[in-house]
Length: 176
Image 1 (cartoon, one colour):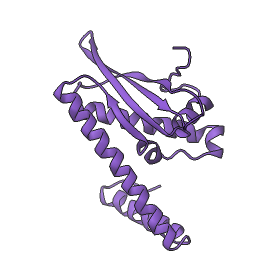
Image 2 (cartoon, one colour; image 1 turned 90 degrees about the vertical axis):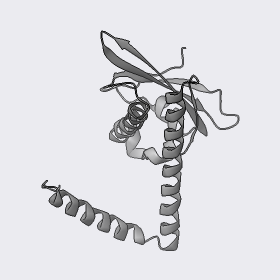
Image 3 (cartoon, one colour; image 1 turned 180 degrees about the vertical axis):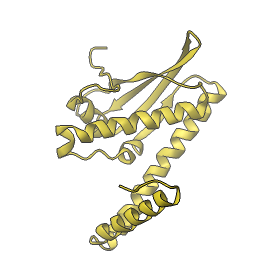
Image 4 (cartoon, one colour; image 1 turned 90 degrees about the horizontal axis):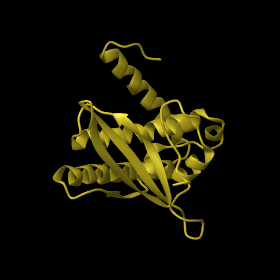
């Protein structure tokens, strides 16, 4: 596949990968696990589906990572961690300075999960679909709040910062 891009720890951000995952209209995820020398590994892929008339779907290799086990919840957390890392790397790049990458906006574009018919893979799909819906609902709620009063954004950020600091103090940490 000559149009695949590797996303891994320490790789340089690639604008074509960013545009593939952010400017797409939808995507499906896929993953598989294997064990090598008693260490479970998981590979992750996405098929990015561009808006109508803007090209063909692209296969995107999202990396291979060692995992603690190959349970459904570990796989789901791996996808969440991978997309969060993608957004963090993107936002830290020059391309990210122009475009903020919100993982919730990427998650709400997920349309499916390609797998075999094993019960654990069905659970992975249910968990990913549930998380995608959760992100969509969170974004809708945020949009409604901001439509009511656009100046409320700074008030919301202030309240969240105060709550975050209180939580850090509660668990004995130092708030930044």
